Structure formats: C-alpha cells, structure tokens
Amino acid sequence: MRVLQIIDSLRSGGAEQMAVSYANALSGKIEGSYLCCTRREGLLNAKIAKEVGYVFLNKKHSFDLKAFLKLRRFVVKNEIDLLQAHSTSWFLAVMLKITLCEVKLVWHDHYGRELKNRPAYPLKAFSGFLDGVISVNPDLKNWALDTLKAKKVIFFKNFLPSISLERGAKLNGENDLKIICVANFRPQKDHLTLLKAFQRLLLSTKEKVSLHLIGKDNQDEYSEKVQQFIREHALKDVHIYGEQESIGFLLDQADIAVLSSSSEGLPVALLEYGRAGLPVVCTNVGQCEEVIGGFGKLVEPEEPNALMKALLQYVNNEQQRSQDARNFQQKVLSEYSEELIIPQVIRFMQSL
Image: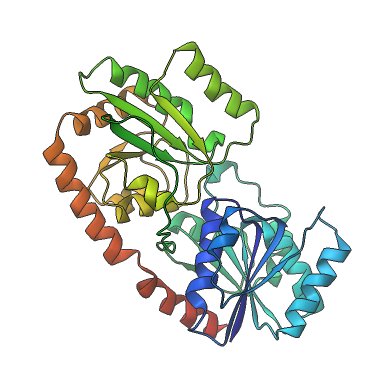
C-alpha cells in the first residue's frame, strides 16, 4: 500500500503536524509513504523523514491547473493507492479522485470550531467521492455520519507527533514560575481570556509569574487585539515568541501549561504538554476533558475568573503540580502513542 498525505500548509498548526506525523509514522510500515504540501511550506518541512516522498505544488488558487497536473503526475509515477487529505485539502483530492477513480480517498477531519455553525456545503455535495472519513473526536464522527455520504467513517485519536531534540529559543525570566501556551494566534484559541486571567493572577499571588505565548502570528486584527491588551494593561511579564520549531525544548523550560481555547477538536498541543510532563489547565472543549482524564484543571471557555483560579491553584501548590503532571504524562504516553494508533489506521486503510 502506498499512501499520500495532502495538506495545504506546513506551518506549525495541529492538522499540519498530524499530516507530517502520519507520513513519518507510516514510512517503513507500508510500501510507500508520501506527503504533498499544496500551498505554503514552513517550519514543518524540517520534520519530514528522509524516507517520505515529498512534493510541493505552490498552488495559487482553487482551480490551479498547473498544480493539479503536477500532483496527478506524482500520484501516477509513484503508484499511490490511497490519498489522505487533511482539513481543507479535500477539494483538490476529490478532483484527483475523479480523474483517477481507482485511487482511494480518505478525508481527515481536524475541525476545531463549534459544529452547530459548521457549513456542510460544498463538502456534502462531493462527499460521495470519499471512500472514508477519519474524525479526530466522536462529535466530528457523528457529524460526518449525519451529514456526508462517505462510505466509511471512523474516529481515531490524534497521536503524539515526532519529537524534536534540537535546542531552540530560551524562555525569558530567570527565576519566574513560567506558564506556557502553545497556540497559533487565531480567534478560536482565545488568547484574550488567557490574558485577562493572567492579569488577575498577578494580583492574586506573591509568586513571580510570567506567561509565554508560542504560536504563528498572522499580524491580523486578532493579533492586534492581543497586542493592544498587553500594551494597555502594561503586562511586561507576557512574552510572545511567534512560530517556533523546537516546541519540546521550550516546554522543558516551563512549569505550567495552559490552553484557553473557545473551541477545539483534539489539540496536539495538549498531547505535547503531557509528554513534557507539565501540569495542565485548559478549557472544557473538544476532547480536552477525555485527554486530561482528571489529571489537570478543566474550566469552561471564556471564563477568565475560573481560568485564573485554576492557574492559581497550581501556582500555589507545587506538590499538586508535580503529582498531576506525572499522572497526566503517564496517561498521554500510554493512550496517545504512535505505536497504539497507527496499526489501527493501517487496518482501516486496508479495509478500503
């Protein structure tokens, strides 16, 4: 079996990390593993294993014929059996399926927003071309079963992405208790609630605490709101680092990890927090409650006071931090490993 992952970008988002992780994990376990980036390369290029066949399309728009033909030639030349299209790359994969009907097509759904507002069109109209759907949580699986015409729908947990052992940026603050948040600057990640909680935390503890924000900054309206809040409230203990490659190295320097998202699927950052052995505070969205399993602090989204109180409990209680961190790490390593998930995925692909 030869499988091609298709993803629109190789910047450091959750879906992008999983596309690379799937390509790397499948290499050596099947006849051939390949990865296609359609629109924009990024830091994750360096994470692609040398055994993985790679193609970049430099696609400019939805109906870019040159990019489509380049991908079609790549699929034919490498005798690809199955396309695994992640998130928004499904349309290009469907067009390819129409011209190469013997190729199987699986859509991998990483959607992390509120499902009640999710538009079904035009995906529903083309969903008859999907041989299978992989959903990253049960709600997405149910949505696919109710909405799409795919032949098979299955839920697979995200698994831990391959770890980087390289050194990277050093977190600011020599003797601070460091709170870290790994989340690209998007409205769904709700940095403003986190900043409000952190502002109140500073007034509620005598500890020296700092907040470290890691993630891609699009320099857009949302980003400006975050920056403006920091300026207006003189939050000099908030540090922004932008997109970073060596996430594991950064997490090793932190004391507490946080996610303040208003919506999620199954956040890869949460798995990375667990592997790093950090105590976690996060909002009760998507699969976060199941991932944490009682070994962390869970609060409702868009509630800065609740988020502050949860953070404060960890700031003031080192023993609880250590105990929850150990238990959470053990849970993540035992339930979200590549060795556990990938054999199940291969069996599903073979069944198609």
